[in-house]
Length: 245
Image 1: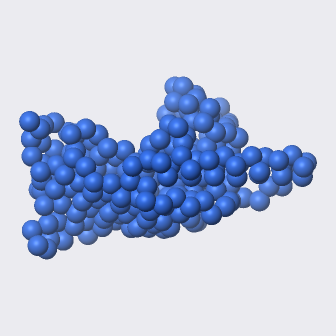
Image 2: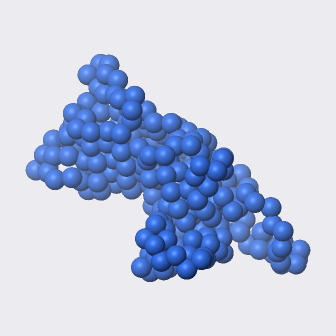
Image 3: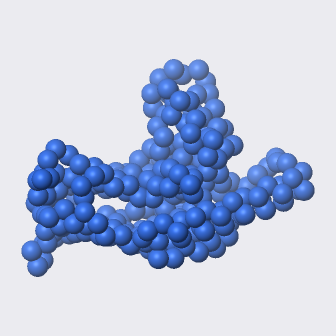
């Protein structure tokens, strides 16, 4: 099962994770919404690193590990492995060629994203780091995912808004936590994850998982989550909105 789920990502060869960022999602009771993200997006080379992570996850013959090996864990594992200096590697000439190929690919991804609605600017800063300014306004008549772009090979969304019945939506931000980190409890983690995700709504907040709860002002509720290497639970909330016609 795990191999079947990972196959598309292995073909793509890379995934993306948030770095330092500020993000806001405003959902109104009439189903109108605005989503913004300003900050870093970090490319993860998963073609090799994630495959190695899979091998480590199943090492030792423990069959129970298969059920505990989630997509998020594998992606995070790949991200952490990027920060570890290579002890053994390819000859320098091959490494240089691979690096140039990756840089060219990342620049092409930046160019592809800039053509998409909502991307006000996409700057590739080098070393797999993109600086993104994104803002999109629309109507929640169907699910919303960000980022997601097959042409640019962005297939692991940070934020997902799902329709729940006729009059509710569920917000989840799986990339803004390290719940499945392989270094959990060991002082490790993805040091690049550093941001805030804020949800604003004038609809009823049916549920949310921030211990601080929601604040209210001007007829709107606001919930703000902090995303760091120590964040255990991905932001989640359910909001009541107008029924679909």
